[in-house]
Length: 232
Image (cartoon, rainbow, N blue to C red):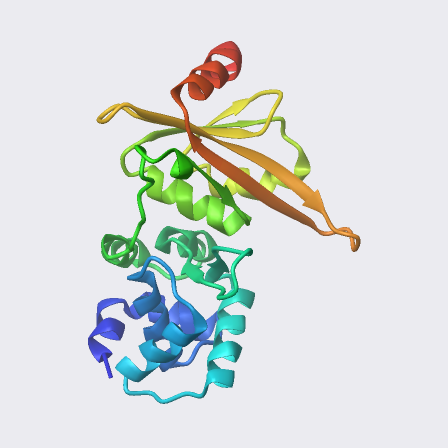
């Protein structure tokens, strides 16, 4: 078993086991999932085999559901037969743990270095935009973008977006405005774009946050001029 991972990230392992209820094997599997763009249930089974832990397919489904419930992974697609999942960005764990374990920031940096990020193929118009199906996915994308881009979150201060805005406070400059949108700009390669935010209320009254990310300099400039410059 890859015990070096638990030695490399002792506080994250403690967090996953103590606060998220994961076993040591499940914690190791989560680290492995972070190193991949996305995984299916079958690939989760393979990860456990690589760790020399044999699990059944039904057990793999149970573990995936547990990871989802604990906010450690999120589904990346909803329109295909084989569902795939992506680990939340390692920095998102820090939002859950800010007031807890000490020394986590160093380990988060180490785990972030191996976090697999799929870049948008800018030259392919089919991949200029993408739907972000949950608040966790929005946060993961923003944490990935912030390493090379300046981010601004424009908010109309609706209570439904309060948790998301608070989670973005360390990486985004907040601007009070009339809409809910995140702007990003990378001066190195002149990439600009927006993440438009929306909400959906279920019949039970719970609210889900969605996003649509698009690389579009014109949209960025429009929102920057009309929201950031005007209200900043």
